[in-house]
Image (cartoon, rainbow, N blue to C red; front, top):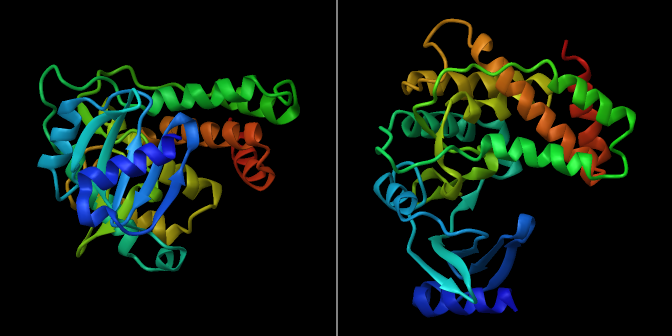
Length: 275
C-alpha cells in the first residue's frame, strides 16, 4: 500500500518526469525508496528538517537537490532527481574515489548554520548495529565476543565537533547526475567529527575490501580539496584509527546479525586484529 501511495504521489508532483517505469529501490530500516520514471521518492521514518533540505538545495555541487517534500499516509516523503549509482565496472577507475573525496571535503568545509543541525547519524548507527547483534541468537557466540572485545579498544576524542558531516558515507551514496557526481541521503547530515565520513573507506581499506590505490585516491583528493578531517600531509591514522575501528565493528555486527557469513568473516577477522 505504501509503495503505491508513494509512486502515486511522485507522479502527481513530478509530472511527466515521474511517468516512466516504477520500481522499489529499497525498503530497509522502515524506510521506503521507489523509482518513478526519472525521479526517486523516499518515505521516511521521521520528518526531514526543512533546514536539511535547504542545505541540499543550496549545495547543489555536493548533493542531489530535493524537488518536493510532503506527507503521504501520515509519513513524511521527499522527491529527488534520479542519479546513476556507481557501477562495479567503475571501481577500477579513479573517478568514483576522487569524486567521493572531493565531495566530502566540500561538505566538511561548509560553515555550520548556528542552532540548526543536531549530531550526525554515525554514532547512532553504530549503536543500532550493536543492538541488532545483541538481539540475535548468536549474541553469546565467539564472533560476538570478538566484536565486543574490539569495542573495548576504542577511545574517541573528547573535543567538541563543529563540522557538517554526512553521517553514513559509503560509495553507494555517490551518484552521477548530469555531468558530475553528487551525494544522496542528505537526511542523516549533522554535526560531528569529519573523520566519521572517512572512516568506512578506511575500515574497508584495512580489512582488504578496497585496494590500496582506491584508498590513496580517495584520501589524496580529499586532502587536495582542503578536507579538514586529517592533516594535509602528516600521518592520518592517529585521527582516523578510532573511527575506522568503530565502522569495522559496525560492519562486523551487522554481518553477524544478518548471517552474512562472507562479510562477517572479513570484518570479524579485522576486529580480531584490534589490540
